[in-house]
Image (cartoon, rainbow, N blue to C red; front, top):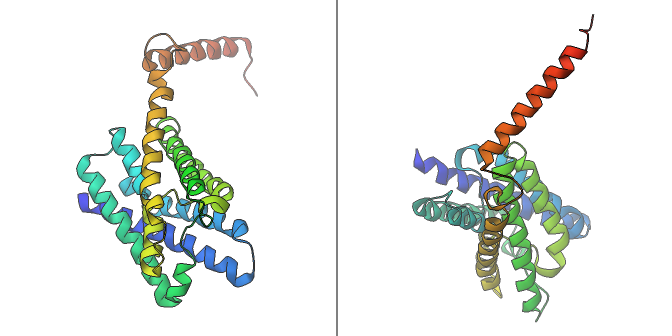
Length: 248
């Protein structure tokens, strides 16, 4: 059912946002710097979401990721809207649940922000970090799907290590919108709604340059190259087998 994909995006985004937000509050509760715990909270939270429901929807859990997939023609226009709806609803539910068990002030502590009067830093950080994140997703899901979930989760982790001091490392409009709405802290929110989408578009543009079909290091199309490699490997294996006595 089509609705299952949208529900999977809702649930997956909920898992990502609730675990990531709780890691922020947990860091404060035990007196640890956010840079120690938060990257693991969001990186491993994404990994959990991918393994929980990623097989249903493809595991976007991020409007910027869905935009990148749409531009690459891997997602339809109707799914773009449906995924976005599920992602924003899932993120808002996560922040509402967090408020129910803590307080509105606690949710406000999970809002992403850039240094005061340093909007340029926030824009630059979100643009670059989202570009890297979406480019890795476009590449890994096409070239190494078996390990893409782990690669993507580790990338989100390092993005938080690198970006928390500069922009809070959102790279996800839904993740930033929900706590800002529920926590009542909407200052500078436009940066987190707009710039990650721009970063996703830039990532897609780079992917057009670097995707296998766009490279010129091989002759013929990708299928022909793969076939040549397979044939070569088979010949080498036969030659080795004829020279090697069977093991007792």
